[in-house]
Amino acid sequence: MIIAVFLIGLVLLFLLGFGAPYAIGLVSILVLILTRGIGNLPFDTIATKLAFSANNFTLLAIPFFLLAGKLMNTGSITTRIFKFCNTVIGWVPGGLGHANVLASIVFAGMSGSAVADAAGLGTIEIKAMENEGFDTDFSAAITAASSTIGPIIPPSIPLIVFGVSAGGVSIAKLLIGGVVPGILVGICLSVMVYIFAVRRKYPRNKFPTGRVLWEDFRHAFFPLLTPIILIGGILSGVFTPTEGAAVASLYAFILTMFVYREISWKDFALILRDTAKESASIMFIVCTSALYGYLLTRTQLPTKFMNMIFTVTQNKTVILLLLNVFFLVIGCFMETNAALIILVPILAPMAGALNIDLLHLGVMIVLNLMIGLLTPPVGMCLYATAKVANISLDRMIKAMLPFYIPLIIALILVTFVPVTVTWLPNLLIH
Image 1 (cartoon, helix red, strand yellow):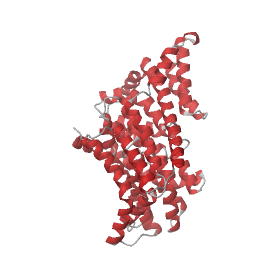
Image 2 (cartoon, rainbow, N blue to C red; image 1 turned 135 degrees about the vertical axis):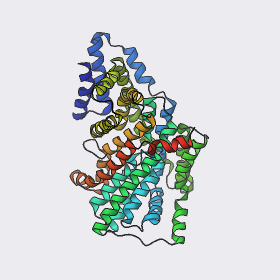
Image 3 (cartoon, one colour; image 1 turned 180 degrees about the vertical axis):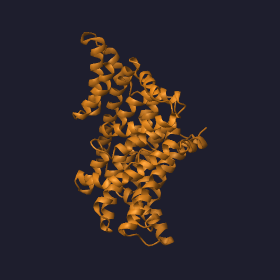
Image 4 (tube, rainbow, N blue to C red; image 1 turned 120 degrees about the horizontal axis):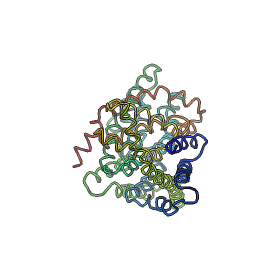
């Protein structure tokens, strides 16, 4: 009965349109009423779990990365990045499509947000592609698909949330572990762009001269330094990932306010307000999910879930495949951070029993949930890109269908070739 309330109740509330923190909180209270009685609710436990779950140094990285992304999304920074990427790879058939993917990889090292990529960089990308003769549907689809790279390559808010939820896994290793899978996703998407470009005879640029390449690189130099500073600082031990988030936001502030002088103090105040609202939304989910996770543990659901899976199969390959299917479905209905906080504590014991590296599991789950951002009804990247491209959601979904193929291929490679995740962090971080 309790397990049914935990799982089915949550899904029903999501389907009825409840926001993630409200659905999670209501189910938690209902479980407490069923187990303790309405007159014996442990208000002290509820207050403690809600108040202190966000009191975590690692979680401080979230508002700082959000702030850095919003600052970098202001003014000409995204234009500079996209123009440089177009110069570097625009000569390949389907040029601007490849530039779209490369720009998302570069921008991923600044924002860590798929929606920020789709809404901010996407505005420039779609307009440029339409002006060059690419059809709107294709332009919107590759923009949405490439935006999912954002939370895989560091900085990554979902990977930070996974690390906090799983425990016992290095946040720095998780962040670096996303580099190769993020590039792999980009390569798979570029192959699909190439196929479309050849079939539809999409345009491409002339091979750039050294002078043009240098000029565009010079204009994009300071924004391109952001991921280098961030990753270099973490790898060298100069700062932790959380401190790196603060450094990234400070660098973005100096760049936009004093170097390019593209935002005023009034603009900065609005950016701070938006960052505070988004941070509060994420932390609200963290707090309610902490209470939900505590109750899950009390009912021993993780152990029961593991035993249930093991009665069906103990084959590691089959279980990884089942987890992929499970998270692809979950991504259609549940907000990313809520899914991580709720489900990771259930899965972590099973991963340990099967000798699955939590580093590998984390990147695999986040990639699954990023694909979920492209699937209705919760697919935020679908809605953001459809709005930017000014097309209906039906058109957007139809245009996206071919691009699920390269994303699934990348997911399969990451799932069954763990070295794609573990090689780089194990090489660089000891």
